[in-house]
Length: 371
Ligand SMILES: *Cc1c(COP(=O)(O)O)cnc(C)c1O
Image 1 (cartoon, rainbow, N blue to C red):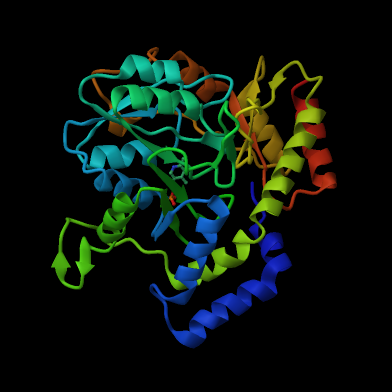
Image 2: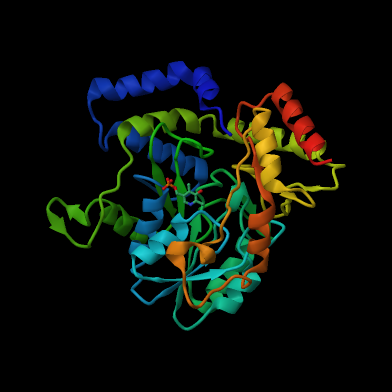
């Protein structure tokens, strides 16, 4: 699904030099490289604060802790997503309220959010799934109306741009109160281990979350909050600082591969290719995900594997039907769009190193097997 090796080969000398610098200085935790990367990412995103942390799941956890949410507070999250979003809500004893997504974009439905609001609702967590921003204009309007926080899960959408109707543009993860991202190796900006970051324009919240990420400790051995230990290490920051310079190029390469796929499937009646509202959002294609019609999806996946083409099902089970998240409030049939998507989605290889020969082979095989 990804080709991290070819990507590394192209930037090897810069990456190796960055890592060597960390080894030479032995500042493995905090220090120069982490500060440099933080500053460069703040500039790239146009956001006041980037708080580097250990991974994307911790970013979400620390965001919720920073907001001071309490057990019983309700947090609205889409049912078609990666589990981390709901996991941290459950771990903190908050009440996850799951809602359906839009079939066209895979993203949280603002209409469904509106219907799910109760007097206990405190936050909305839109997930910018597969690399396009959720309908943030509507979500911010709902949040304002009901005095709710918005925490964006931007783990798959770093670099995507959102345009409001008045022409104002913001980067994904920098639109709500807090944004969270992951630097897991296969993410659009990936390191060589685990990493993540929190974004916010709120000075007070930033200071609090920085402290929470460091054992709740602003002054050494003085603990103001119950915190966690979650850090981006200097070696990962060195890798990320090099790769950040290439992020726009990496995004362009993903978009080019996506355009090739879409063109190749244009006349295939059994395939629905990704759509997004380009007057409001760009798409950075963390995944290129098809919706299949009249095709045995699992059989297609096996047949592609026989031809050496990986394909993945993101995601096979919606949140409300996961064993660990069984809840008497929800049952099969409650969220028809998500329940339809889990049966028909298939993601094709998507990364920065796909060449025309590979794309031609993949699309010819897919067209042949779905004819
Ligand atoms: C990857 C991902 C996460 C978690 O990131 P980690 O760094 O693996 O903890 C959370 N949400 C979404 C949507 C993701 O894709």
